[in-house]
Image (tube, rainbow, N blue to C red; front, side):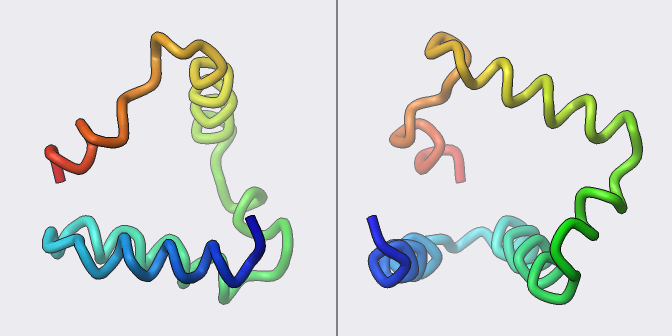
Amino acid sequence: MGAAQLKSDLQKIIERIDNEQLLQTVYDFLKQIEDSKEGEFWKSLTDEQKKEIYLWYEESENDENLIAWENLKKKY
């Protein structure tokens, strides 16, 4: 999937979200990445936050730990 398709798909998803708190979180995340230099975001995390991210990544490798997209859409 190319960048243009990703942007289009992301815009469609965002348009369907009505949860203001979720939208604010996504916005803040993307804005922080946009405003920072490459690698700065990672450097800004505490060791504990980095450990959590690594743990989440490891857990995501196991399909049993994943949440179906349809269930997430219903929740938010």
